[in-house]
Length: 206
Length: 250
Image 1: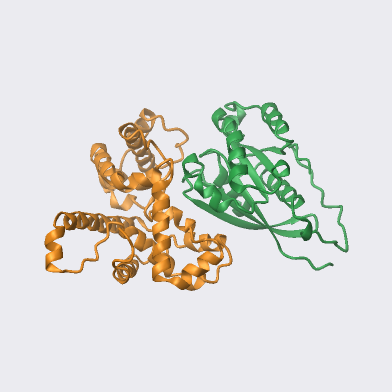
Image 2: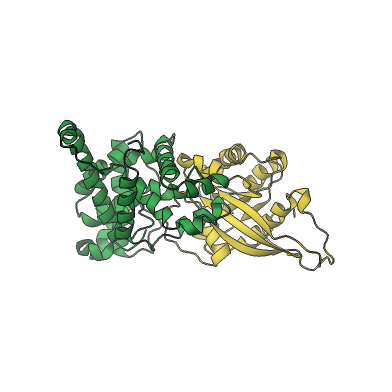
């Protein structure tokens, strides 16, 4: 094997308050869900090691307060992000309509070097609620929006039922890795083609 | 919402399911079926008082974190109007933490930064070297006055100390001339909370001075939750106040 340096992928989760950012992160990292709501104040992050193809990378997943009043946190903590995950609640139209703002806000505050090609991801969360009967944003509408913003990969998730959470974060890791700067590219001795995964209800391009 | 307050409030701990549900319905609380009656009742009271506050102070409105500040009042006072007016009084100063332009929070973070700069140049230069001198890692502690780091009982104690200090500062201000005459040194600060937060960080200075990034410092700070000794912390904060007397503007 070629020597490789430890890779840290910094992922920022954004979206309106109450859409499930903390829950998604907790489900992915700790395999736990609590339906007791506790608003995130300030910022926090969790880390998890993931295997992306033949590489072991550490995902550092940042969760910040969802209220627009705490904007300056962004400047302090979004710097150096490798991927930004935008979350909305499929049962709440306003949270979907806010996605554009969150995306713009992120680009301003994190100021990535190549904003055009910066990897985003959209998650439509809480698809479990009321068996899907209370949803107000259709998958088609969400995908149309994602397509209009440069083909952002889209997943429908339930942090509560652990639906699509792993595949979504796996895809996030892949996309974040793709965005890595050139100096971090290395040549592996072996390439493993067997780890390709299949997933449902997604338009992940990776 | 945490359940720590329940033992301190026997009358509210025993609300019936009917009472809780009725109140939850009346304030339009949803998705709270999983809560025990006393917690559902508590949540519903928080909602109605925060709604009233948002009308009372529309400039501030509602913001995340306010329920952290209100919850101890609701737990200790059975009547909503009492909890409301106590909260209003508390928010007289705490509302600056929730301003849309964030000037209130930034001013306080700057002050904590200058406390480090004066009291602990070594720590400060380390913060500078990793671009963390803006002290955003204590953002949560400042916004909800250490509510997330301390237990319910510790929080009540700390807040009472802070209020007493604030009152003492007001009295000192009124009697300023006579105090000066007596040449008594006074170490009263109405921003004592910032010294407490700075002291909490300094308790971990050895670890923090080894942190290679602001993420590691944030982790240290967030992990203080549940692990602080309040009285030791207040001693340290008092030491900081007297050591820095006259060197940190009010």
